[in-house]
Image (cartoon, rainbow, N blue to C red):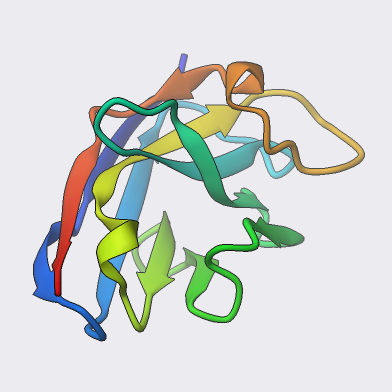
Length: 126
């Protein structure tokens, strides 16, 4: 079993940056996929970015390409999501999730993920 704890959310103005961190506990294998998803009020959870626990490859939603970077932070043993040039449309609860299967390609489908954290709120004001 894997437990996930997210941190780093907050309230910022448009154009600012935030870094979210996801700290897994339990046995993590290099092939596991760690994904970030977000959920706006009244909407379904949507894919943001994904990476394997080993640190590559990565995949991004079109809406965040060029602004967000997902990476393994080896100093903290976390999966971080660096979010730059934030927009009000990025406002959501952000969840870290883990897919325990060794897949050929990273999955962007939320039901494929096995565990998730409690979420962290990101609010971007205009």
